[in-house]
Image 1 (cartoon, helix red, strand yellow):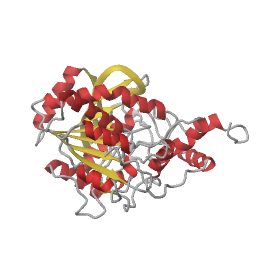
Image 2 (tube, rainbow, N blue to C red):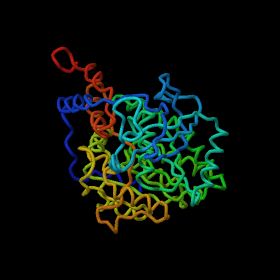
Image 3 (tube, rainbow, N blue to C red):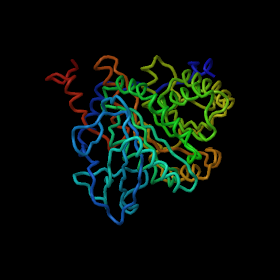
Length: 416
């Protein structure tokens, strides 16, 4: 598979945005701020739903109350027990994270935190064991977010995914040290490598736990690299992957197609059902392709074009093409979160153990995911151009961008 996926006769690539255009978009994004420290617990509202999740993270502890964990790296994994309150469907659309406009949040209209407690490994194992026993099918859903995510971004987005999909699986968030900055692409990328061993240890524990009957993994954008590398390590160490690892869902993966082929090969013949969500009009991945030497990104391939079609079929990888879906942000990188009907369908199919396919809908089943983007620091000005699309990936996650522009622009607005 790896030998052929990097053929460059792929058709046109969307043009790279100009620096002035990108800076304008960033400045507009910076105007829509929101409060930080939203993980400070508040009292529950009887009209709101609740999502309980286990968190494992390699992030360092935050100094500010209500943030819990920062974007810096910790020497060893930490665990947390978090409950998120989600307002009624009468005040919020499915697929939307209703960020509070002020603190404390109002659980009747905003996402809010009801519980946020750091726990030790033993308590985390007890929590998981208890929740799995109460679940209808003993299944676990592990979510791995992408680039440019603060801790609270990952927590609230995962809560939204779990609630809106209606999935019955026990939610486990594996979050890695992202600085939540457009210019920190290199740091974030290395943080995924830093976290590989921790995520593999999580997978190994789930494989050993007899109470866990099925494991599904959902990753988005840069988080796909971490998911794939951790699975690859586990397969090499164990001479294969356990049968209980049933579904791996790769949403808009910012992964080199050649590297993906090598990773799949290293996992051996016994592997989970892989579902790949692609969109050929994903502008963030188009920019990423330019940065990475014009090598195709996995999330933006044309699955009907050779050699992709034949090699994906030979490897048993289901492909859901979202190109014709006209939902999501202007970059077409977050279509997943904007179609409530398909979010619910994904949840029902995960719960019933069905293989994901797009044959019924035509436009395709698609999975929701955390906000993420494609960026690379190739010199300050060029890095800002490449990073800027991530500012628009989640309309509710816009902050700390003005100072990046200020660091480049002189008094006349010119680039230094």
